[in-house]
Image (cartoon, rainbow, N blue to C red; front, side, top):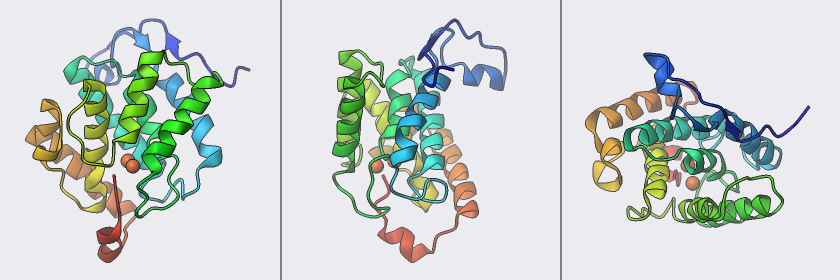
Length: 207
Ligand SMILES: [Fe+2]
Ligand SMILES: [Fe+2]
């Protein structure tokens, strides 16, 4: 069996209602294949608590949920945001302050691209590296792809009780009050499942 499914697929036709929500585009890269491949790379080497930490797999999934929505709203290609969701915090050494983790995520992407594990073209790789490197510094200007990545991550600040602020988001659909409200509700759910004392939350560097 091929452990690394191809990251492209035939047309995925929207159905209706929530079915259409999953179909980011009627054709193009298959996010499921990207997610499988990304997880096969990052999970074995992840240093933190994969299932119960603030920067683990549930955060990655919510970042992808946000990115998928923003891609659909803006018409952006979801390939790089999908990789970003599952890579950007994968090289963290701490749940707290870890200012170099974006640089390490970019280096991780570069290394696995060179090995053929990440099948992006040169431009997409550059976009992924840029988004990873600058994701935790509060940047709001850059290519649309990077802006979507950053917004998708920042909308999930709600998981630690921080309300995402429109003036710190980049894209119009992310700034909508209803988008922020949805993120807050997901954050409430996440916190209820993995409650962390408020004083611990206050000390976290959470992006
Ligand atoms: Fe991060
Ligand atoms: Fe993150």
